[in-house]
Image (cartoon, rainbow, N blue to C red):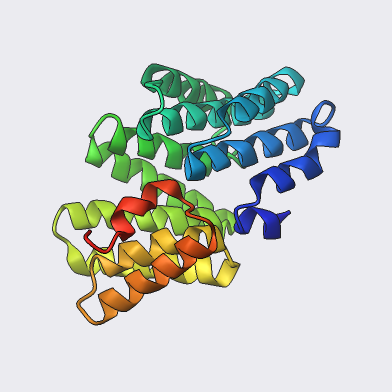
Length: 236
């Protein structure tokens, strides 16, 4: 399943979980998570993700399972908003707030929830201090659980905030760590964004080399993630 997900084959990965989704809450949330991630990377597949979320919400039996489903609903609403499909800001805040109320402080999904609340704070509320605090909580939680993929995301977004404040050296370190983790994990679908981000803080010729590698991977994966296209255009 990881191999399919890491190469952007979300539908195929989700299909492996489908036979269990109507009876096993973890399978239902896992399937919904894959289809929500597909929306974030491709700006497509919204109806399938909504259907998977409804199943996950219906089969959840305890607070952690309900919280995990709410976290995915919040991410889907966030993706719809940030990608300009439909403004679902209120729904995103409500769902993530519900997840925060349901998930125990030490629940496995708490670090991911903190990260997603950071995304809302940074990109929908424009409150970078709140975003930084949320990303740091997420990073600490992901590190303690050995969740290297989530660490790659927290490193990248903390680096983005550092760059926003002119802290280039800190940003370079964070972007490099994010790229290193994605290379180690083989998270191919996340490599082009990591390469492009690092290119933004490197001088030429290294920056040009990184961008060209990002373009190569972007083409290899059929133009995914779609939101990266403008950044990788030669005129950008």
